[in-house]
Image 1 (tube, rainbow, N blue to C red):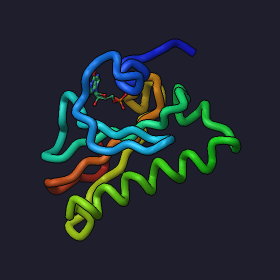
Image 2 (tube, rainbow, N blue to C red):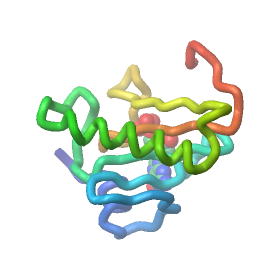
Image 3 (tube, protein in one colour):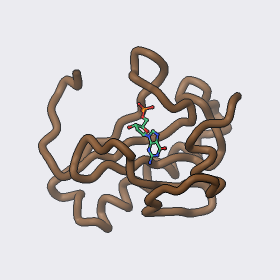
Image 4 (tube, helix red, strand yellow):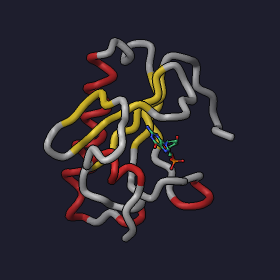
Length: 114
Ligand code: DGP
């Protein structure tokens, strides 16, 4: 598995607007925001895609989701609502091959996504 730009952000080799960190998860603002709030939650463990996750990653994936939900609640986003997205591989629109959860908020989301 190759290194990615998110690996460099986790190791502080390149800057990012980091909004949350714990032992397993880092969260930072998306460089190309698609909503007033657009934060990426990444596991520090470099899993390339959701397809590459295994049962051994179950707790980590749960922590990723809960970290995003807790952030949204802390930031006052939960009542109005938000969207979380994990893009997987080409048809999912994944461009960075280090698993990440998008948290989008601050505007009305639409369904289905384009
Ligand atoms: P995805 O399409 O799901 O792989 O999303 C990748 C996201 O990562 C995309 O919304 C743009 C964002 N991104 C790409 N490079 C960087 C970077 O260097 N810094 C930050 N903060 N975000 C980045």
